[in-house]
Length: 439
Image (tube, rainbow, N blue to C red; front, side, top):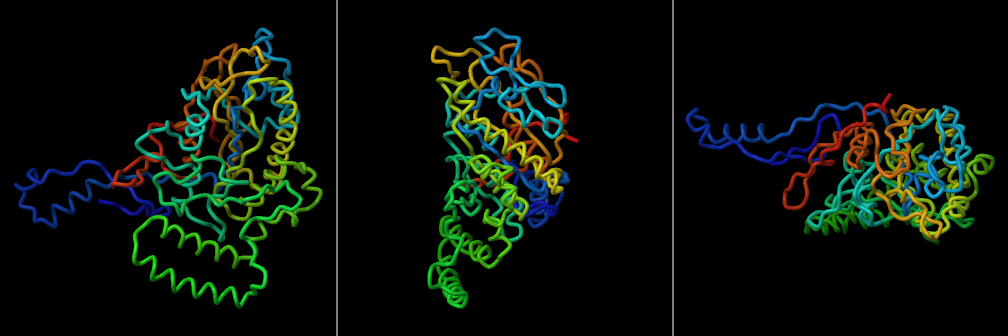
């Protein structure tokens, strides 16, 4: 049995394992239709309505595993071989973060740092899977990413794709998993930092005017209607959905304009920084302001097994500037309260500097940052021990982080979606909302 959605949310499918035993009802004299109605009522899993605090999410993912010691969780009182060379800087809330983030230090009142993230996956692929799905990897099932779930639950808004990837789909775990392919992310296909940046397939081909475009659209609709009706293949249905949404986007000047950085004020572009981090973060702001529900962006490479000090000094300044301005910009536009900004990485780095002046993979404890969208700024949640080796207070799992993100979006994390084979799978299995960080 399937039930199509929570009436207070966008349609989605969920079910319950287990059925009423027919023999138990036979003595009551129920007819077969009555029995089936009872069974259907027993199978439906009831969900409490959750009011959304956030309308959109900007998920900034730092691939490779950013070191917590050189960023959100420095250890100034540990021995040199643990604390590293970079030192600390005091924030405007009286805490300390890595000295390479002076702009973010001035804005600590706007964000929350979780210093007790933890999971057990030291391989890049498996750590990335955890941080994009909230699940441990499984050989039996491919889980949907955050963006795919949000797209499934809410769908497009203002004719913009619900889930957008800047500049590209970052990894295989940012896909749709067991959900239909139509909920996949729309990738820009080019880096906004490039002088010749242009989103692929967003403009009409040369020689195609508006009238010719509409004729092609009508002809394609006729062909697709007959073709789609003759097959149930997911990729065929998804392609038809992609075409329909692409036409909606091309038909909506406001939606198309969101992708055009040339329409942004030059001074604002300078504020963010005309580099990868700044340009991508500015693009994220434009997209969520125009109606995108979840935008995932990546920046840099943080797998610093060697020379971590020079690596941080090379990549952190652009990140520090861009993220600080993003928080300011969202706040100035009245968007921060309704936009959750989430900065994650696949895991952290080893407590001790290695022989190559770098740090290796360390999933036992690391940090993430959250801002806006119902998160209380100016606080530190959880703690690692004196050498950033393991959580000392309030450990947080990827499932907890995902459950909290979904709660802020008004999505019930233990809602069941239907996987192939009519298998009901919870959006997140076993996560808890981190209530203490919410407003």
